[in-house]
Length: 290
Ligand code: ADP
Ligand code: MG
Image: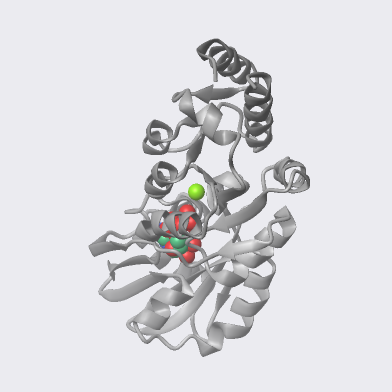
């Protein structure tokens, strides 16, 4: 690998909208066999919206939404922004005893009620019976919606279904990479049903779902221990350790600062075509040097 051809490669990558911070990454990118994608904000646009609200008998949807939004005011998660936005202009009550339960949801009190808000795993962890909402849960998750469940004083009362569409060219970029023989993997904190539906739509065959924020790097390292050479593509704060662990970390340009600072490459355009371009370029660069 001559320094000159690497420098030329880094320059060419910049023209393609891929910022390379670590010149070694270009060389490493030519040796990969497995590409691991975060779901929310990487494969998808990262701006979920509430599309359905299901409640149990005796609870009305506006009330459930008001409580959920009151609690989500304290969170910066994309799901939180969607829930607060849907509550509209109304003045929301304050939450007390607010806690973020990383990768699961939130907890706190609103108007004297103990609220628990988050995914099915969180409800299971707190022994909340969600049987009444199970049919809606099944239906929406298999359609690729992310479920947020609300429990009030230990009783499940509502299900919010949120949808976050794929980025416009995710399918095409992944198809290109698939044809080149790369193993494509989705890595997400979302539940397995939603993850599988989105993976199917995107054209990804391996899914690692239900991963807690500090489990993403460990998932990368397990793939490496199995002999794979792995790139991680992500946008979130919780993707940073996995971006660092991978042979090549690739951040979405619109993502969190921590992800961008950790990754060796950053995609300046909000499209996964940049991943395919960067890898093709790395292979061409290394070929020219032989
Ligand atoms: P990812 O970015 O892969 O979706 P996260 O760790 O951010 O992973 O979130 C994992 C899951 O935890 C989400 O899919 C959601 O079910 C739940 N969750 C996290 N934060 C919140 C929140 N503020 N409100 C509701 N659910 C949440
Ligand atoms: Mg993300």
